[in-house]
Image (cartoon, rainbow, N blue to C red; front, side, top):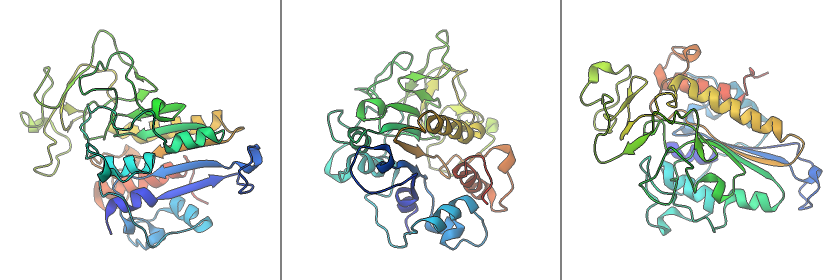
Length: 313
C-alpha cells in the first residue's frame, strides 16, 4: 500500500467526547487531535501486523478506537495530500499543488473554506504544530527576517509552530506564528533554490562533511545543516537552525503546551509529525533501538511522541 496513504489515515483522536450534538456547549464539542505521519507505511505499525517493530502507543489508540483497513488518498506525496486535507479539494484540480520547494508562496487562498476555519466557526481554538509544506508569503521572494505571512494563521489556525516545508529542505528553522524562532538580526537568513548563496559548505562540494549520506539522485546535496545535505541553499540564521535530533521533542513540547493552555475549552490540534520522512536522524535515545536501521528507529520515536513522553500502559 502507498506509504502516504497512512499519512492521511494515521490517527484521528477525539478526547472528552460527550455527544454528537452541534450544540456549542463544551460538553458537546470534543477536543480533536489529528496526528499526521509522513511517509509511514501500512505495515510499519504493530497494530497493522508489523512483527519486527512494536508501536505500543499507536496500538493503544487503535485498540480504543477504529482501525481502518481499506483506505484511499487524494495524493501520494506531501504537498498535495496536505492541500486536500486543509481545503477538501482534490489537489489535481488546482495548478501549483505539486511538491513545493521550501521558499514557495502560500498555495491556499486565504479567503477559502479550510478545515481549521470550520473548527473556528464551531467555537474551537485551533493550532498546528509540525510540518507545513503548503507555502508561506505571497511570493517566492520573501524576507525571512521579519513577519513571514500569509501562512497557517491566515488560513484558520490561531496558533502555529512549524517548519516551512520538509526536514530535507531549507530553510531549516522553526516559525512560531509569523516569526522565525531564535533569529539573530545580525545574521539574517537568505534562501535560494536556483543557485548557491553564502559560504556554507554543500553536500555536493564537501561530501566528507556529511554525517548522513542520502540516496543518490534525490537532490540532497545543497547546504549542509547539522551534518546533513539539504535540498536548496541558505545562508545566515546560524542560531535559528534546528538540530534534527531535537525536532521531534520540540514539536511534542509545543503540542503539549497548546493542549495544556486550551484544556478547558474545545480545541483542534493538527499535529503534523516529520517521522519517518528523510532525513532520518533520531534522537540519541532511539538510535539503534529498533534493530531495523534509522527508519525503524524514527518509527519508534514517532510512537514515543504519540504517547506524549509516556510509555504505553
